[in-house]
Image 1 (cartoon, rainbow, N blue to C red):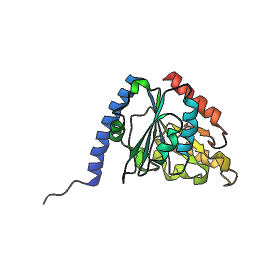
Image 2 (cartoon, helix red, strand yellow):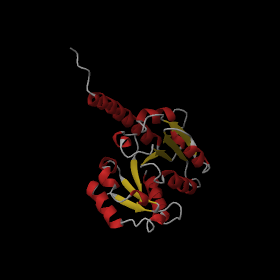
Image 3 (spheres, rainbow, N blue to C red):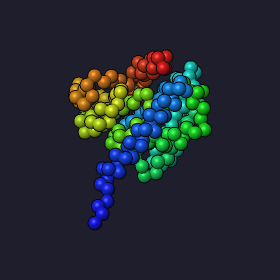
Image 4 (cartoon, helix red, strand yellow):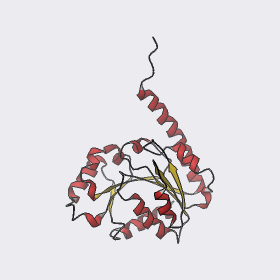
Amino acid sequence: MTIPPRLVEVREKILKQNDLLAQSLRQKFEKSGVYVISLVSSPGSGKTKLLEKTLSWMYQKYSVAVLVGDLATDNDAIRLSSTNALVKQIITGTICHLDAQMVENALKDWDLKSLDCLFIENVGNLVCPSSYDLGEALRIVLMSVTEGEDKPLKYPTIFNTADIAVITKLDLAKAVEFDFLLAYKNIQAVRPGIKVFELSAKSGQGMDEWLEFIQKLLQKG
C-alpha cells in the first residue's frame, strides 16, 4: 500500500521553491538599485490609505511603483493610480497571499532600473503572508487601533517576521479606548526591539516621522 505524502511535506517543498525564487528576486532588486518594501496586515488596517499618502509625497522626489495583491477587484490599484505612481494589481483568486512567483510574473514588463522604490501591498491576511518571502528588503506589519491590543499575541508569526510595526488609525484611538502601553508590551513580547510607528494617514498625525523614515531608507539604499 502506497501512502500519499503528508500535506506538510508538500508545503515544505512549495516554501523551499518560493525561498529560492525570492532570493533570486532580492539579488535582482539589489542589482537594479530598487528598494523593495512589503506591507502586511489584516483587511481594513489602512495599508492602501497609508500608501496613498506616502506615494503622493514620494512622487515629487522618487520613481515609485506598487504591486497590489487582492483576492478580487482592482479597487486598491485604481485608488493608488491617482498618485501617479506605477501600479499593477495582482488578483490571487482563492489564494490568501502573494508569493515570489506572482511578484516575478507581475514585474516582467517593468524596468526595475528606472525605479527607486517598489512597494508590495500583500493580501489582507495575518497568517499566510508570514511564510512567503517576496524578496523584499523590508517587511512592515500594520495593525490598527480598532483591531485591539492583542493582535501580536494572536498572530505572532507575522509580527516576528516583520522588520517594522505600524499602529494605524491613530485618530480613532481615544474612541476605541486603545491601550498603547499594552499594545507595545504585546508587540515587544513577540518581536523584541522592533521599531514601532504610530500614525494616522487620515489626520496626518505621525506622518512626518514616517515619511522621514522612508526617505532615510532610500538614501541608504
